[in-house]
Image 1: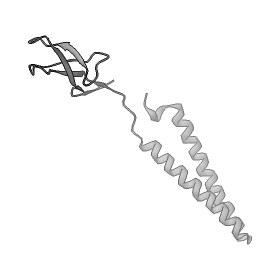
Image 2: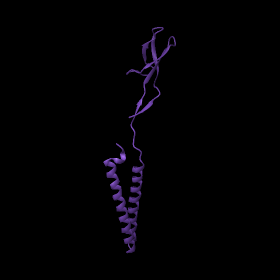
Image 3: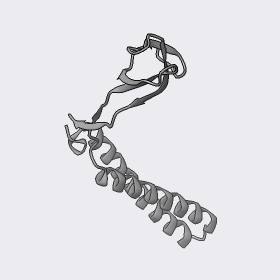
Length: 130
């Protein structure tokens, strides 16, 4: 479901419109207070109106220009690189839980000594869109 058609977007949009209306109302109060000679009160009203206007327009612009999020699933395989310390034979296999670097794992097919895990890495990932 697109973000712009959701009820949350509608509620936030209406709240920002209400904040813009309150900001304009504060500007009118500032003009009225200034005309009656209350310069300090007019300054506070104008600051409140300006801050509300800036906040609401920034939030509205971010909401409208926001791109909908696309969930992606990373599809990759974790590989383990093993090497025999006796004969130098190396092999790569799928990762098994409990593998960690510099641990001994499988037996070497050539000399039957234990092979050491030198690296654990993931293959190049492909992004799939749902």
